[in-house]
Image (cartoon, rainbow, N blue to C red; front, side, top):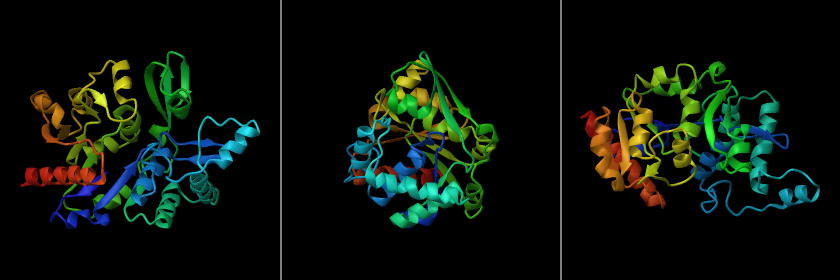
Length: 302
């Protein structure tokens, strides 16, 4: 996520102040349809229609299509709800008519009433591939079908070296005198690294203040396999391990209050530390965390 420096606390919340860049290394085709899990999860959340219980897909979902596919003997390991299918069908139509993924995403966001600008990291395909003890796997096979159970050995971002980052990023940055970047509390290996692997992305971030929110609290991942994967890659499974992973890229680490004792170790890596309640268990807590980060960055600038 790229954002402008706040001028006034309330004004900073205007949607035009944000550009949200989503990983597309998870994208794949299923049942002939183009699936963009990260884009869709963010889009549904911004539209207020995401399923908060499952943590993915749309709320008030039905599954008649998948049930019928299973009855017909189709492979149904990846579940697409009936409402969710409409998104993929419209995306497929747009791409088939030579529209870019960026344009298709903007159209879907508009139809869902999303006011923030959400873009894919690139309009060129990048495929995250997982090398495990059980063989090499496409990302969704590892993540969904195998439930991240095979021990992970390495990750490859196939096509990243040929995928220019989305030009909307430069367009957005050119409008602001003091923009900064927030790396949200996502899996650094699976969700953030595909974006960083794009040519020129790290060089661009070197010119900007970068703040990262740790996805680990008290040595545990709040959601997903981040802790498991970091351990299998020989990384420290803690907020310090996240800071070490981002060292040289990130200027400020946001850690949870439960990890406050780790702040000196992170500061020793050359980063500032912002301590906050990072457990976003409600809309109010999400807003409070965002406000805390914005205030911290504003105070640092002053």
